[in-house]
Image (cartoon, rainbow, N blue to C red; front, side, top):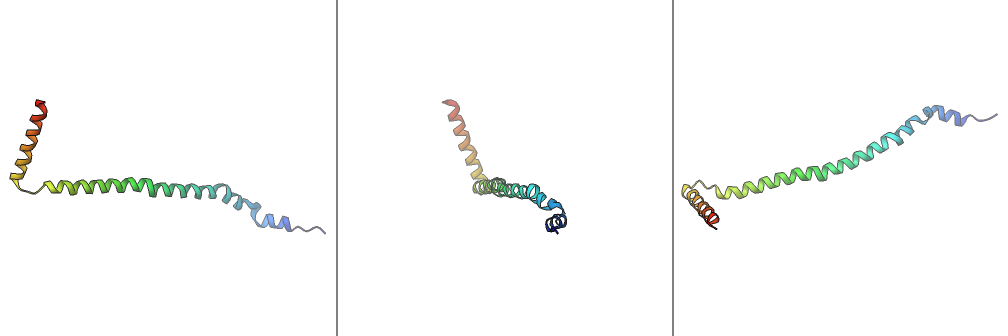
Length: 90
C-alpha cells in the first residue's frame, strides 16, 4: 500500500502557501524595511540633528553680541557704517 505521507503533509501545511508567502512577500518586505530604517536613522535623523546643532551654535554666537548695553550696540552700528563707507569708496 503506498504511503500518503507526502500528500498528508502538503494538505496539512495548506499547500505551503504560508511558507511561499513568507519567502516571496514578507522576507523582502522586512529586508527593505531594515534598509529604510538605517537610512532614516543615519541620513534623515542626521540631517535633523545637524540642523538643530547649527541653530544652537548660531544662537550661542549671537548671544555674545546681545549684551543689553546700548553703547555697545551704537559702537557696532558705527563700526558697520565705517566698513560700509570704506567698501563703497574703494
